[in-house]
Image 1 (tube, rainbow, N blue to C red):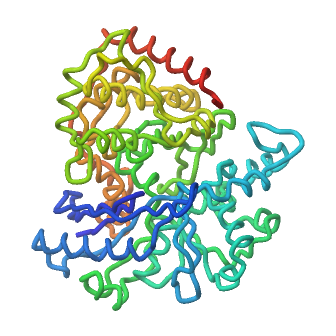
Image 2 (cartoon, rainbow, N blue to C red):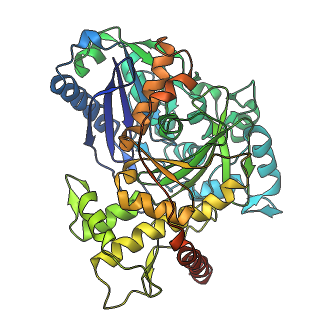
Image 3 (cartoon, helix red, strand yellow):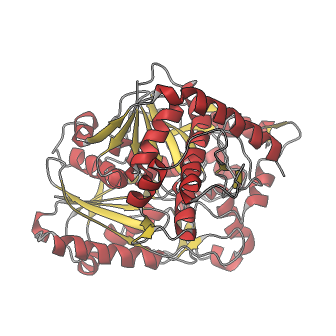
Length: 506
């Protein structure tokens, strides 16, 4: 069997898969997200490791699995983390997660220029586009500016740094003692040359920013075997020494495989804390004006075009906490589905703007926040939850329209995974708003873990290719758009865009 982990923003999901790709057992466990100051969002790496040890013990014991039957271990994880470690791999600070914006001023400084395009200076933008086919996030969420923040703000720590790692990279070091990363994670540092045939750290960019390349880990393919589980890690995890350890992948690229397709231009949608639409493409693609671009895929032969939005399931989590509809730490989808089914769809329904954390695709609106429009005293809890599901879906439609323009011969449906895909109501609303069939994947919350297991199954020779491995992903249900809702949602989408313009920068 393969044990595959998916370390998300607030919890880890883990699963055991057999040689045919069937799920044997799965579990999840939460860990803290720390916010010591406004704009600072950190995690303690020890919390990841403790959760990994705990969930591994539970998986093995609950499934009566013999550890001798586990052949490989794979990790996928949230991306754009920045964690400095010493020569022994010990963390020197907490991890600065993808949500952390403390380095926003530095991001603005390293991308400035006299002539500006989309907020970027023209010359630095062209340099980054040529080498990486993208550029660092201006809000400071990407590792580029965070690395420089460490150097400027923590000089004592900076002198002790041996490597700067992403979340997955640190956990893999704990397992096999090797400092590695994968092209997808390296790409999002915006310090890697992403051109075909290269996929290596860029000497030009590192020199320009004054970063020693020795501080960065070795880049390995996601399909590579990077070592074996060491004795000390095996003892803590309760596994046998010598289990094969894979190079892994970021959660975004692993989920693209877990969606069950590596066909070019086939779209998938993931709603977790954030949300993204993605599709594999043959060549690097970027839309600077709409902040959509391709990154290196877990499939070594292709790239993954991504339109990533800040708040997806976060909106539903927030409302469920405030209105008492949580079930074991997650939204009570059964209750929410029932309420939405009994809610009204009419011109007087409230409209939800889902920007709890601002937005970046298709427009950068860091100062905009969420809100309800047209909310009246006669509206109830059912109306509020429908408005939230619709608001997130309308925001996705905004990016989806831009995304489709970049794809050639895209598929006739969209595959839906992530925790949000457990909501039947959300599946139907998305089908109606996107006006395309939505394929709800089976066990959608395990998309990342399943994609990681697919990578390991190819490396172990259980499948001959990723094209063969992704066929193990199953579709639970297909939701078709209700044509009677087309005019209604077209009108609501126009209102959605009007309220964006009215509130822009407010």
